[in-house]
Length: 404
Ligand code: ADP
Image (cartoon, rainbow, N blue to C red; front, side):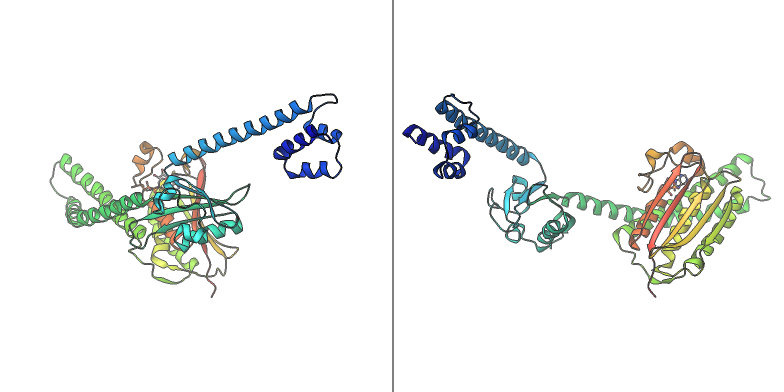
């Protein structure tokens, strides 16, 4: 081996790592060197080695630029972003992560998850994501002032990504809104109840009175509209209590069959007036559910009321109760106007009404389904809807059955 070749070997060992040096020293030949450099026979090996070095420098420079660019971008993002290596130490963290975790810039890198995150709940989310691939959680600070949403995902390459969002301001505004609605509904309820009583009495006294038709019509309309107002205020109060958790559930073993039949009975008169047939179909020997009987009754009434309200005369509404894999499924099926596909995800939002013009005729507050969803979720269950416009809708609630 002459000196030039040794120089190449030294240069190349920088480029390709010690493996090459070992290969050549162990009896490698110029042939092997050519092969590694991809240089044809008779080519200038020195030039090929220099090119290899240049290529490596260029690749390193470009990788450095891309990394600097990514770091710059991550620092622009408002959410905290942390990369943990496989042994759960911080490999990288953006500026927002330092702010949320109350650290000086750059201090997080190298710390273990528990040192960096300072909260065992965030750390256990990270560990869970490490084990199962993902984990999400909402973490409220001890003083109740800070609320963080943490999403942890296992990286497809190695380690974990944690994304931390500060939702403290959002949660504070939501609390203020809930309190405002609660206070307002309370204040409205008392005078409204008085107006309601008076208009009801006036409307009753209309029979046989000498009042001109214009005034009679006015009184009937005031009576109907005050009824709507009272209903809206009551539903608002209900929803705000359920949302804030200030109306605790009164739990007992609820006989589902009995609840279904009682709910259908309560709406029988309304269905009859609308010309809608109302049926109950309950599987034999259903197990009970552990729940709040009044709330579950309210859930069924809201669903049945909608089903009848959005049906045309001649339609049928069926309330079914079935056992399904440790759960009780309650479904309310109608043959009414249905819900357009684009609205299906939104009907459970408070105040959401599909096509206000159509609903206007049938009345309603847009709160009934929001209440249904809260009741289902507070019983560890869920609710969903399937519907086709012009053909009807089926709302289904699944609630865990009780082990008795
Ligand atoms: P509302 O008091 O207006 O009935 P809900 O929250 O109970 O309020 O329902 C929200 C909206 O969802 C309704 O305004 C209506 O547009 C739609 N909806 C609910 N149930 C049905 C149903 N069974 N058939 C068709 N549309 C429905």
